[in-house]
Image (cartoon, helix red, strand yellow):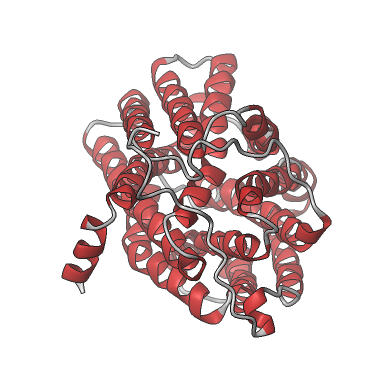
Length: 415
């Protein structure tokens, strides 16, 4: 099997370059995600309400990603991805070099966030361009596997630095920035997705309404876990940054296999079943976060339940690929895919920007952290209902091979 994978990669150098770029950005992401919450707690000593409020400026670029991507319509996808990776790198380096200055922390967090959010839809569009319509799930799964696999490297670096050097955020953030800048140079070597054709500036269509609704629900669910799941472990259970590094290593090692398998499952099962199963699993994860310390477990066991919930949630973020594959299948034309993915990110961030503030100020502080996750469980039930409405051409028994055109054989490298 390993030899077969190697032959396929050698026969598709553009796929190799793409996965290398994704790996570099994944390393940066692994460093950021395992460090940022402890950095805020150690350096700025903020509470849950402030932590929730901070998500508004951090997620604002996600809300504006459709506008950012539309403004760059004159650039092909690989160049937009390279520019986004450069922003990610500059944001990380900036965070590593500033002192405890709140204003500069906000500036560089936003720069990092612009890069991360603009690269997301470009990554999905490029991945699907490197395979036929029947391989969308596989290509997206391979990209996700490369990204989460790279988290091992990023999390391992954090683990070693924290355990052997101490909480040196300069080393970790600058290392992440360098990885992102390397990813930018690799993205520049990719060939354009649609040749030299310009992308649409903005796409909003009623046909894609269910996709938009799924993105909105994902935005609410996502932000609960990004903001409050690690915050429970940090503030309620007193876990250090090295714990998150270890959890990321475990979830990333598992994710290398899980994400590839999930991609193949999307192609075999279809998007509807995968999205519904995701919603069901999230209900259980939410209940674990909320009530692990109230079900009579022996001392020390509740935190292990949360470790399991954290790992499972990280793995399930890959289900986002099912939404991307669904959109690609129902798209009126290939050129709709990239701007529509950007619009989906804008919609999910329109919701996710409000969730941390509401969850921190009006739920956590007033009623307790448990009710934040009870609310997330209710959103997961809504996701199951919405996913049950998903239909694609394959569901109608039509034989459709609508590829997103991929110029992998006839355009010079360097795009």
